Length: 506
Image 1 (tube, helix red, strand yellow):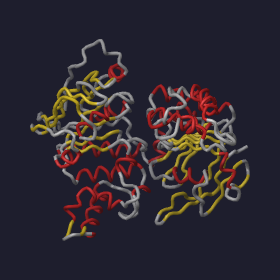
Image 2: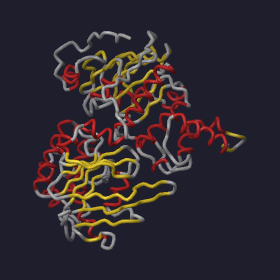
Image 3: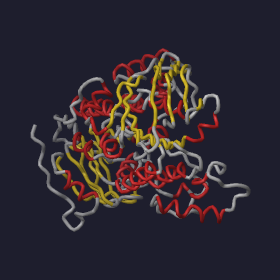
Image 4: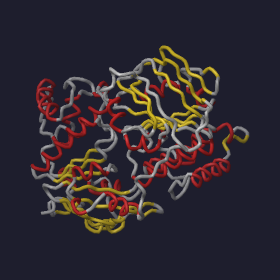
């Protein structure tokens, strides 16, 4: 029997058909994977299946009953969002069991009893924290596992819906999660697994539904198809998975030089970035890659060491100086740190150059519109118009706006921190091509931070590996994957940290 079903669901927004007569059903004891490009309709479907949106046409059935007429049925669907959605100043135990009525906590809340009840759940999910710790003090990976655990303690759930659940997880934590998901499947629960990571889908899933442009375009048992088939269904064309995107126009001129830099989560880091080069940084979650770049950018403190850009000494600790002098950092947490979600695309672009858009004491709307249209056209941002709130764009289109905004500041160095996080395979290729074009045609030095080894190897001229805040190796982009992995997990610590590398043949 179908535990959850969408029948002929149509959802409209101004100028957009987000879902077009979609039929999809989910069975108990089955892991059903949902995939599609950004903007394909997956998020809208989720919101219809969880009761957030009410469709214009169609119905949502839970255990055969129309949930649009009985909203209490939606309590049987446990949803875990992609972004962390916890209360940072409440304890781990409190977050685990909220809302209390769903997790069976009745009457006055006894904190000691709550913490005692939390211990076996934390152990089951291998979350290395104490029940009384504040959520703000635990790692992002632990926070992600915590909110997944929270969904499973709800008493009445029959469907577990996971939206990009491994985005912030380490490899070890991902393995733990997969084992738990398989156990939940054995308990005859339906699992909906939404991911852009194709290898995870084939490793975990039973069946797959593919969305494109608001329509369900394909459904299959995963054992009957391969990755090439899934990609073709997603994007409507063949995509070359073997294509490389490193820069072919690397100058001998050193653009950025970092010497013996030490900060909050990194120690004694030295490296050079050449003009027109894509330099990859590889490492596990917590290795210090983001903190290193944020320190150069001026967001985090530097304890010792020096930086030079274009042969000139660099002023540390001043983000305004960094932007004005050509060092721009594009953050990993796009929605929290990269955009102003309630503002329009136009306003998100123009905020970087307000002084240039002034006419007298006010901002010229005409200049704003001309600039935003140029960015939208140049970077192929898919949107009905520049006045659409940026929060309603897909992740890939938000990233294009962020890149376009950075480019109007005339950068010399662009740091891409996990630029394809939560982005589909087709849009990933677009982001890769953009990085390559910026390096080759503009001579910009690109720094790519990524937790995806294939992404780093596909795009980088050289790769620097970090482990526990220290430089663990430096490699040519053609180096063996196993060699780099050994460095980032610390297997090479007894060896010489600085490795020679061979310049890539053109």
